[in-house]
Image (cartoon, rainbow, N blue to C red):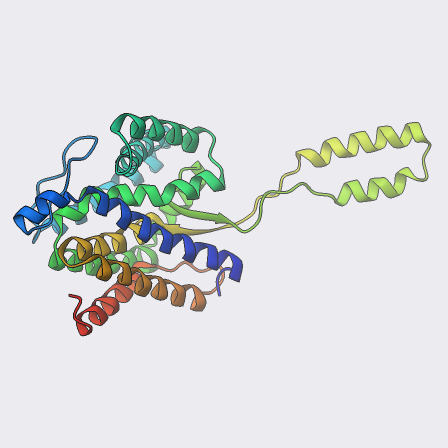
Length: 315
């Protein structure tokens, strides 16, 4: 197992919670009255801008191109060291998706205010709690924007293509690993990031100092303790963290959102269980120090779940 059991459970739990938060947000945007009249699922307006008008059968093409172009742009930003540009880009995306999520349950004015607050907090005063608390809302906002432009065929093709791309990017070209490390170094990582432990101050010198101080006079001991403690306070040990990319959360959520849109809430609620099970299997068999593409496993879990839903007559 790549991570200890505690970290693994936290990652898996947040992944599953993110799926259900996303489904709740998508469901809030469904115009129930219009849907009842037309017999087809209709969605209400977004708080910021309009949804892209795409053919549901071919919408996966644009998304794949967007992923490739976004990756190329991020590489350019990293190459030229323009990380401030990446922060600005990320902040804009964060603001838009958070606004979309909050607006599902409150007024646009309040949603925008909350989005500004949490975006500023995430960008300028980030910490593990606010980082991982805002991540589910980011993907919920993405789902609310893009679920309406997919059908089961197009989202299935998208999951297959993304799984292939993810495998290539991690195992072959390894550029996804480079991007992940660069984002972590810049403090702007798009995905879950769970520290193995909080940063801590070394106590070794303080312990040895206390032993030596018993042999010194009180005045000398005080000076000695003061000098050593000032040194130890400044020594902060960097710790590793467990990560899960944002796309690994967003794409299965889009799949479940399409099931909600075209079939039923029951089908949508069952699907994340299979995606989570597949992710759990990956975490269980993964090894420390190695990188793994999650989407091939998560996509497989989604399709196994789809097969189950078909067998029980829910799709």
